[in-house]
Length: 190
Image (cartoon, rainbow, N blue to C red; front, side):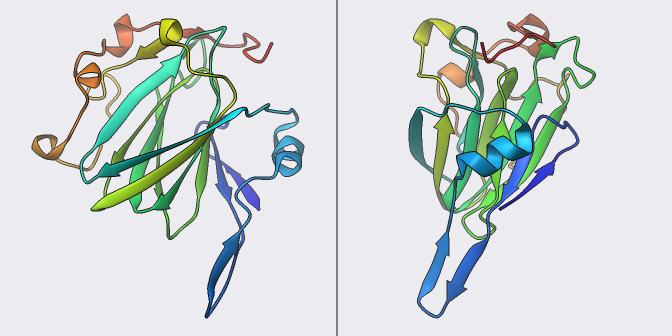
């Protein structure tokens, strides 16, 4: 497994090694020791989640506030998405910037989205099975979001707006300027 820092260095792409032959493939999707060696600290993942979606489903932009902030390690099992992480750490040099990465069942890439970032994805394939690890449990009282279409963020979701499918919750999220933010430099892993 190799690791690649993105334009926002705290967001990391993981490239697992795929072993394949005429029978299919085998891939190691997570190694705590290798990730810890790369990052320099341990992330105590505690829960795995999975969702199934069809073309145009957009989930996001979501995050949780402390003390239930979450790091996410996301991947696509089947299909393809455009995955987006937005830096919501006030005072960060990349505050309000985002990273977009294509994840698919074919490329097997994963994206590590640390605490202090909002996360969302849009499905680009007919169907998609999306999996993610988190290091904190869901907390309804800490659950927050940001409008996916906020012009201040400038995210190109690729899918035309009439084809997007959103939850009622995601159509009511506040603009980035009005959302709750984290503080850059604050130790979110305490």
